[in-house]
Amino acid sequence: MEDHIDRFLARIDAAGVDIDLEVEGIVDRIGGINRRMKNALRETLVEYGLTPEDWHVLSPLRLRAERRSSPGSLAADLELSSGAMTSRLDRLERLGFIRRVPDPSDRRSVLVELTEEGRSAWDAAASVQARKEAFFASALTEKQQRLLNDLLRRLMAAFEAREEARKES
View 1 (cartoon, helix red, strand yellow):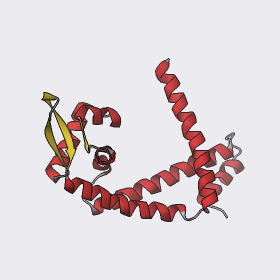
View 2: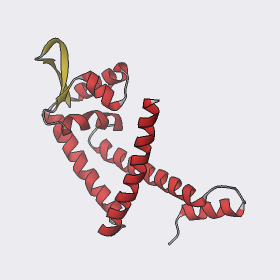
View 3: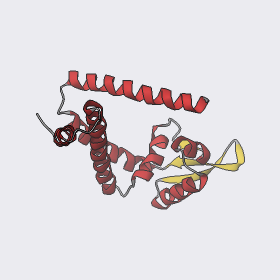
View 4: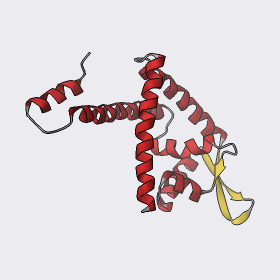
């Protein structure tokens, strides 16, 4: 079995470029799969009137038991400025997917709360996307899926450890 990355790597090898072809293959394949997965998500979200930016705000709200959060906490989780967060919240509020409610523990603050419309849109999009992702993964056996997850987990853990070390220094 050959893919377009193999053909690209063969050209690198034939040109005599001093690049580790195994590493290049890993990086290029992960990048290509990532692009395809992002495109599939964008296609799904369009069906529900959502953008990837909307999705990233709605997801933590949907996955929290209380379905609400402070704007500052959301911004920190998403690594956004307060201005960018406000812009995203304004859009989602206009769509009826979130509402701002007074914070019962601090009258000067508000909480962002997922509405029933927001939950429904998120759930529907998540269901469609999950089916797409299951189809993508179906190219592998269950054993291969577990092995790939283990290998990717090792890579992710190495990146996370490196990022944490940089924060500490």
